[in-house]
Length: 412
Image (cartoon, rainbow, N blue to C red; front, side, top):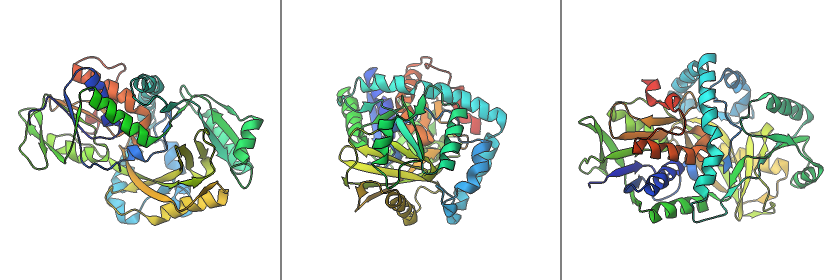
């Protein structure tokens, strides 16, 4: 092969980058390891989370961790058998949570997230499916007076960037109460966050837009190796070739892929679980609903409803834990939500770096290598703006914002 531009990874960040480059006129080949859509990109909550501008690597998150453990009814799981994966990550996260690093990370993430919705509008305007992006906000509910008081106070004190929220109105209260055995004790509505109407349709639309702009998709397993100051590419054990540009956007696999060319990326699999119901009575146009005291978000996609939760730190290749799905099914039953089994079960790995900032930039070790991975919970949110930054980097232009904080060599 003698390809000009290679993108490694066919998740939402890789495809958004591919669309950005192909629309600039670059001959782009995207390489995805498997033809199935099992990456975290295609199993998330569909929520464009413009309110999440504070990195989760914070002293507040660390202090609250014991109370959020799965064993105590929370969503945070630290499997004992996978301690080799999560214990070093936890130590690095504590270092990243120091006030000065946290404030610098928050400033960088806030600027990036602040461009998320405008970038989504720009990308959606060029997709063949015109009804994918919705800007109806989302609801946050609490089941008890104590949880509602604490949650509302917490959100009022939080920095939510460009996101706005308000108390729900009476019509909204009735709509939400109709979903539950017991009316919520309290709720707020974010008014300008976004949602993707259906992740399967999004994947199809991104692929079509990429192919129509001249891109090409192949399947295979990639390895990188240093070649004369550049990143050489080998597919399925074949001969190494040297593209003009390589974009690494392989999600959870990016850390292992970038290591042979001299970069250190201490990435961990932050595994999430969801259940989907094809049999339900969920309102068609209801925005995502967050049950905050259960750490669960419920989203309507096309003809199905999905409930998602769990932050399980560990090995991406470890077997899924059925107890996580059972917890979700119990939440659905206890709340009385109008979604019925049999449930489809899914688990996927969010690619997370210890400071909860992505890695986006051009390699200082390989002249032809650009990287874009480690978006943790914000992969869907940040995919279009990341794609625009990748397009600028490949073209030798200045990105639309300062990306110095996302340099992978912060882990050198």
